[in-house]
Structures are given as C-alpha cells and as structure tokens.
Image 1: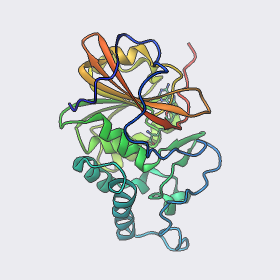
Image 2 (image 1 turned 90 degrees about the vertical axis):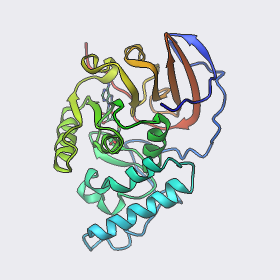
Image 3 (image 1 turned 90 degrees about the horizontal axis):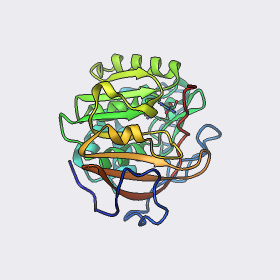
Length: 269
Ligand code: SAH
C-alpha cells in the first residue's frame, strides 16, 4: 500500500479536524450541483458532441477515452500508469444514460437518474490513485451508482465489493458490470454506512457519496495500514476529500481539498 504523509495522529476520530493542512495539489476540479443542471465546464471535451445525429462508433469512443486520459488526467496530477491504463480501458459510455452517450468522456459528472450522478472522470481517477491499490487488494466502495468506479477498481484488483442504497441503481449497475465482464465484482443493495462486515477487513475503502461525519464502522473495517478515501461535509455544499490511513488503532488524515458529491443518505432504522 502506498503511504501518504503522516499529518495528524489521534485514536478513533469522531470528526475530521478543521485545522488539517491544505492539500499539496489544489487542482481539484469541483463538480457542479449534483443532481441539477450540469453546465459544461470550460475544459470539457466536446468533440463527440459535435456529431449528435451519428451513433458514436466504438472507435470514436476509444479515441475520446484516450483524449480524456491525456487532457483530463495525465495533464493534471494523475501519474499512476496503472490508474491511467484502467481509465483508458473501462468503457465509460456503457455506464451513462443512453441520451448522454455523446457526453460520456466530457470533463464533468452526468446524471444517472434518481437524483444521482456518475462522477467526473478526473475525480474517479484521482480517488483511485489515492487508494494506491495493488493487485489482489480488497477494496470496498460505498455508492455503486452506475458501477463505473467499481469497474475502474476492478481493472486494478479482482477483489472489489460495492454497496448501493437505491435498489434500481444497484440492479442496473449489476447488469452493466455483468454485461461488460466485471462479474467478479461483488455487489449488494444496502446502506453502506455500516460497511460490509462479512468481507472485512478491507485494504482500501472508497466512499463516493458524502456523509457529514466519518462512519465509524468503515474505520473499523480497514486493515492495519489500509486507506480510506472519503468526501466529508454538509449535504448540498462543498466537502473536503480526506485520505485516512489506519495505523493500529490510530488514524492519520490528510485533506486534499474541496469537492462536491451527492450526500450519503441513510436507510431508515
Ligand atoms: N461511484 C458512482 C457514483 C456515485 S454517486 C459511479 O461510479 O457511478 C453516489 C451514489 O451513492 C449514489 O448512487 C447514491 O445512491 C449512493 N449512496 C448514497 N448514500 C448511500 C449509502 N448510505 N449507502 C450506499 N450507497 C449510497
């Protein structure tokens, strides 16, 4: 597992400290309002949008994907070759709604129904890179959504577990993952706040919806030396993206800066 700088040490944190250091890289592109209008960002790649009447061909999609990796990732701070290769091989257009096909490789999130979004490609790459996964590592994702992030993780390790709270999305993501050969990804519909005890502990945990505090059950399900990447902050506002590393019963935290995610919702008890 890759280690990030030791910043703060304290046992079983209940909330993230406000005084944490600022991120080394401030290039984080923030996502627009999660479920509302998704205005194109100035840097978006509109090359496919210019031919809306033509069904995008596999070749067009492959070159759009290549451009996405070069312009949105390599040109920024994504330098892990395994992550870049994963981003280039997962067909993101298979995870978006049919009427958004021509925007699949653009530099912004897209709605996937039920008020949820598939994250901006750069954020998917960044969070994946932060996890520092090795082949064979076990990784738990909270917030399956479209299944895209899970597929990217599945390019790096064959031990991927993912939880989605909205039944329709959980079902659709399962079907997409199976259709594309990611049948080894293990998924379920549940409230991911509680993690997945049955398969714990995990080498890495990635949370793709934002809670207003760090769920203790997830901390407990990390292996010693394991990492969790999680946006934490108020629903509807900006959150901080944290990377948390377990060291025995202590956790080090590092704040990467501002991001915007849909809220982590809770199942009724
Ligand atoms: N990773 C997804 C995008 C995440 S959007 C992708 O690649 O497409 C965030 C997702 O988290 C949404 O689908 C939302 O329904 C889900 N979610 C919100 N609260 C949750 C919870 N408590 N447990 C599991 N999933 C949750």
